[in-house]
Image 1 (cartoon, rainbow, N blue to C red):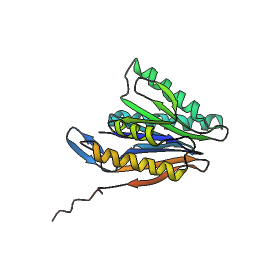
Image 2: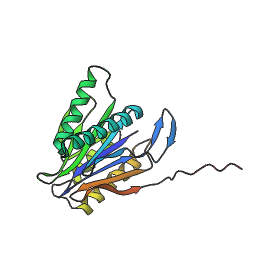
Image 3: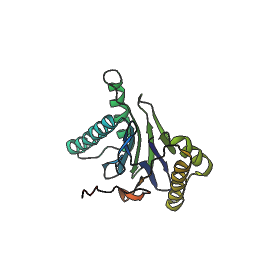
Length: 204
C-alpha cells in the first residue's frame, strides 16, 4: 500500500513517501526511505517492486554522478528526468522495471520543478503528483487545497493533510512518512511523520 506524492511551491519542491517495506501480508520494516538524493539539488521518490525500486534509483543516481564527473557540470532537472524516462523506455522492451517515479529538483535558471514518470516511461512536468494507493486520497486533497506559489508552511500543512487523510481512509494505511524538500539551498530531509517506531526485539 505505497504512497508517494509531491508538489511545487514558491521556490521549492516537496515530496513525501511512506516508509513501509512490505511483502504480501508481512511488514518487514517501517523506516525504509523511498526518497533518494540524486545530487545536491535533486530528489527521486519511487514506488514499486522493492528490488526494481532500489536497483533502478541507484542506477540513475550513479549515472547522474558519472555525467557530472565526466563533464564537470550537473544535469538539469529536466535532463535528469528525460534520462530517467529514456532508461525506463529502453528497459520496457527488454526487462521492464516495475517502478514509478516523482523527480523533484531546483535549477538556478528555471527554479523548482517536479516530473512524473511511470513504469511505462510516461513523462510529464507537473505541479503536483502522486503514486500508489495513497494517490486516491492525496490527489483529491491537493486538487482541493493546492494553489500556485504556496509557501513552505502551506505546503507542509497540505502534506500533513494528505498524510492524515491516507491514515484515516486507506484500509491498510502505512504508519510512517518521510518528507524531503529541494530549493536553492539544496536537497534535504525535512521531517518524519511517525505513528510507529521500529523497536528492537529484546530476547530474555
